[in-house]
Length: 478
Image (tube, rainbow, N blue to C red; front, side):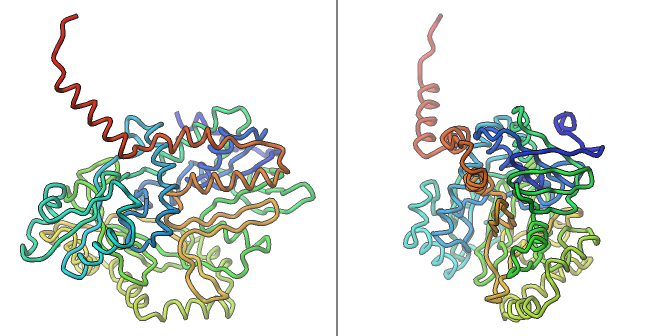
């Protein structure tokens, strides 16, 4: 069914569009959905180099399947959590509205776990003093007994004298971002002004008097505005057009270990300070809750796509092989916390040795786990580009966006998938500016289709009241 919905470019073609979106992952697809459904832009095209959409980082095996709200991610400041929260609620609302059969997502409990006096104190401060309890009304501080009710294996085998606390919420959205990508495109293709081309690789982008000409393996596309949402390749294309010269990438490959039926939902551990990468966590797979994934590991790799040696050259193009890039890498990797972490993660890929070295991370979540319970997940994990600022010789945390003349470049490491609709909303407003205000954006309709469907505490209370009335109401005869 899916292939019938997408135009596969198999012949030389040319097209003139108001907007061309480069990249058919979750970022590009969310912008296509937003502009196609909620603006009156007359002609929009999305082009994707792979034969299928969402074939790289948005594929279900290549990411942590997490919808990040900022509630249990302890490396988020309150300010960042406030920003991410709205983006996550936009996507969660879309899933609630368009995925009633849970083909794109599952909803389960999630928690961040504190073990021992120090970690418990950190969580208490975060929840009560730093404002996270106020920002997230469904977030609760729960003790050992309630943790055991929700996640028995988290408590089983743990020293009963060890203090425990978790911040827990029912809003644990586990997402198949690949299927969500396809859903966005299916929604967009209901509009007559949309064309989608797969198997169409960009070879060059040239600025013209009227916008841009995009040369591809299947012909030329002319457009007034362009958004490049091609992950790590976005910076590569930006540099070719003279943008982003003060940025390089630190590509990190994430991997996972698998176990059978350990957890019911998602369990995070506390973030190690100064590390930009997610803390090790365990969670049940989106489509099979009998499979528990632990990870991610974080290995530095000189490629822009996992397992594709051909993208080593692309990495070198982005890196630039200049003194500023080398000095930035040296400054970042010389950190006495980060360097041991990077070296330790290299070990996890080694046969047998890696599994044995990773086991303590699993046991921090599930104390009773043994070596034979876990195995390396083959074919899982993608590459997440960390942005390096060569002026300050530092890592830029989170997403990067470069806005040029009638063109936007989105480089979206975590939590880019979680905030894809918020990014799309912002980019839609910029695109309309590029198009000289000729078109309008119905943001209210977008919000009605998405965030207004996100369940709030009052909604949950009303649902519980209705259920109670249904149960207690006496039966009546017709």
